[in-house]
Image (cartoon, rainbow, N blue to C red; front, side, top):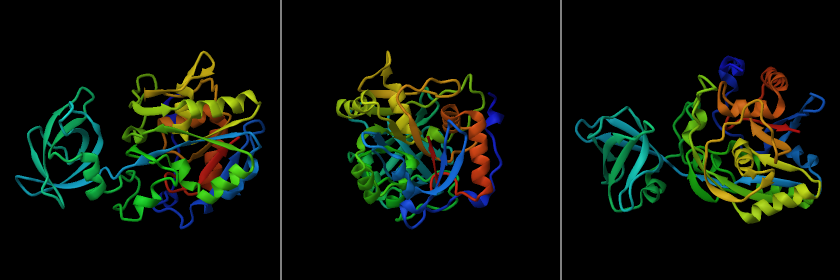
Length: 341
């Protein structure tokens, strides 16, 4: 399908700029693939859809405050860095960074609220600039002190202290993401306990969400997915295998979780592992692990929307999104959720 088939018109008023005061107070659009029906529910109603022995899989990545404010050393002009990932040899504080504005190799910058200086290096083969930080301190630890949460580009406000908590799942454990696995933002500890009380087993995987998650697709045939680091432990894999062998169902919270699980299928078996995945899921795709998907509403023409379309079918995806827009659902990271059965 051409990218335009994944486009849709969304009133700006439906793009949620802040989360609701209570995480699980959001709305839930329940979509039934067998019948094509849609139902308007509350997110807390999700517990009613599980059966004893089912497996709920969460992505326990943790967003770190990767946005760092700085100034150009020569002119004093403002600059911003978005830390993506370490990129230097051992002992060198070199990171892949997105820069705003674009800076040339050799330009020096001063990080705000700290005496640390940095210099822009040449771009890597991936086209992303490298920045060397002139400090012996760990850059990720430094970011925890002076950094801001890297809110998505459609959030038209500056990040604040509240975002360090609300742009993070309650089960986040492993730092490394520059974008939240947003489907998980709706869960509270109380709701997870209620689901477990239904006899549901919870498994955790890790996928550190990269900034490429927001990149629109110009041509699906040539689109290059940004590789993202993942891990599926033997313990988690066994919980999932037990559910499937017992005839129960596997629920993925978010497209990131689903991509980990479908990446780790080998010869029809779920195999634990870790590394990088650039799996691009689009129609047609054979899903071998996940039975149900909890997800948010996604940007037009993105790989996330294409994944959802592959999971539910393009006609039902269009119907569901039209229903959500017509009924005033809140969209994107801080918006409402969808359950695809």
